[in-house]
Amino acid sequence: MKNTLKVERAKLNITQQDLADKVGVSRQTINSIESEKYVPSTLLAIKISEIFKTTVNDIFKLENGD
Amino acid sequence: MESKTNKNKGARIHKHFKKLGIGLILIAFLTALVIKLSHIEMMPTQKSFFKVFTMNGFILGLLFVALAKEKIEDEMIAQMRLKAMSQTFIWAVLYVILTPFVDLIFKDPIQSLTGQQVVIAMLFCYLLNYHSQKFSNK
Image 1: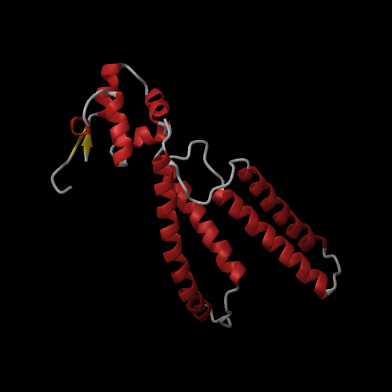
Image 2: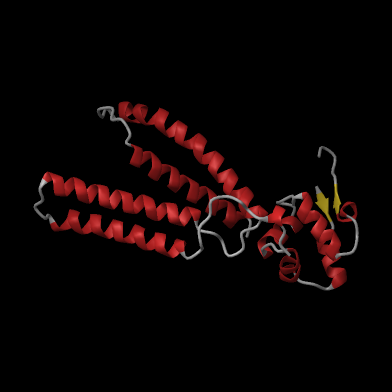
């Protein structure tokens, strides 16, 4: 699963730590999501999309084979 | 932002127990080391008491370290713990099955494993697995 979290974060000019604090996870979790090592739960994905005032589908996209 | 669905409901204890666990492990290890090196004459009952005391202290210390909460206990940590536990379970089964063959290879008499040995091996395996996952995600 691909994501545009880094781009969205850059648009709002917030750090990984800021985003982590807002959604209630650790900075390592945000880093793992950005580097596509970890796929977040639906709940976390919705929380993240709410921070960026967009939809989950705009941030997280399925790849071939997912 | 924390909701009811986001809470990790696994059996976890306060993060300070990690330090307590490390302390217990050190005390158990040092006690065993001092008794071994000082060649103190002991009755068999005293010897078995100290063996039980050190082994149980070691197990309890490892358990405290394994169950202690992280600073932020989120869903990725919960997933890592689950993965480490499932791999530990498989490893423990293989350990119990394969240990007699290791004794055979080295032509030692086959000894049955004690519960304490299996529990220590499982806790070690869990902690190694969990921390290696944490390290690779840093």
